[in-house]
Length: 125
Image 1 (cartoon, rainbow, N blue to C red):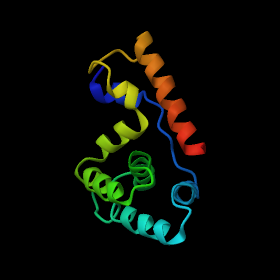
Image 2: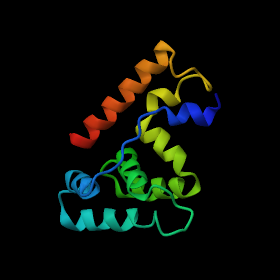
Image 3: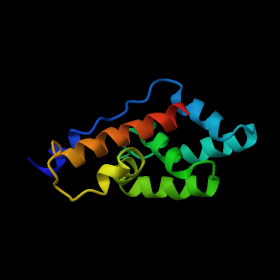
Image 4: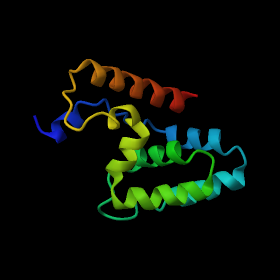
């Protein structure tokens, strides 16, 4: 099985309508700051090669937290390779495992479960 096939075995959150706005409101209760964050996030998705726009924007928010300057940095990073953003935001434990590990391995299964739980906790917290 190729590395790509291993990656595809990870659960991937598909954003629902309104999730991005809800997280923006959670992280930036101040409307002016929320508008600035939304504007910074909007830079990802302008290019034809940008993929999975809402999912990546959520990943950017997760990595940046309530820090506008970090949103800018994360948008820049996602524009280079969005997969790095998704890996860091959605799969932090799994990403630290040995490359090519069998996803059926106990350590891989633990990491997959932990990653999904931590992401959902962040999303719904």
